[in-house]
Amino acid sequence: LTLGLRGAAPAAPEGQWRPIFDGRTLEGWTPKITGHELGENYRGTFRVEDGAIRVSYDGYGGKFAGRFGHLAYTLPVSAFRLRFEYRFSGDYLPDVESWQHSNSGIMFHGQPPETMSLDQKFPVSLEMQLLGADGAGPRPTGNLCTPGTHVVMQGRLEKEHCIFSSSPTFPNGRWVRAELHVDRDGTVRHLIEGEPVLAYSAPQLDPDDPEAKPLLAAANGSVSVDGGYLYLQSEGHPVEFRNIELMKLK
Image (cartoon, rainbow, N blue to C red; front, side, top):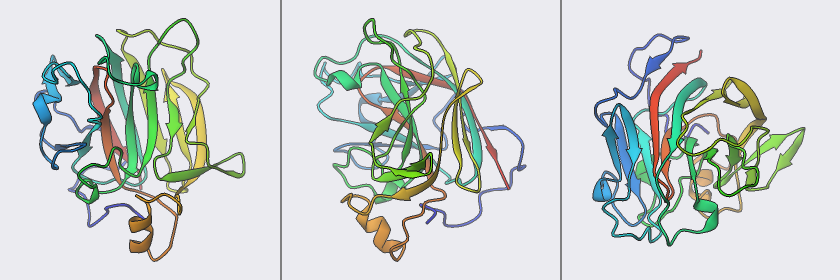
């Protein structure tokens, strides 16, 4: 199943990097925020400032209230390389849970944004989870989370929802370079500051997940996932993304 692949993408050189964020506008990106219709950018959650996409909550009245947000790139992709920089700044909203502190991510192989329900918190997808420091303990970044999905790691089906990478902890306020490599054979690698920190394969739908079941039915029971949409995440802590580039693979 390729989630949302409905035709060929516009002509662009395969095997070459190209920007998918112009540094000035949100053209080509569509917000979906829990409790709000697709396309409604609630209180300017996603905005462009100083050449970066910034996730901001200055219009939220001091409460996150479960309004998980995702900014979907307009075209689905299958085998690709993605590279970008991110940084956390400011303070998280006071009503978020501890796991939301300095927490965001890049969702990929995601369901089409128009298939998300009004109150759905996360798209069925894989997530390259991005974390910043929170307290004195280690907090790696470039992790894996699996809303509505599973993967294979070291030869076995992995059903744990979130799995830590081998990366170091990075302080908030520092720009961090990240890459996501997705090969045609289903192998996925996460890289942080140029170093591989996590690898797995065989992305697939979780047949027991209620939000994955409609996708499973549409695929006539096939659990395999080999493509879909990219999303930038909003989870309650201000974060920025810049220099977002995509390389499509044959």
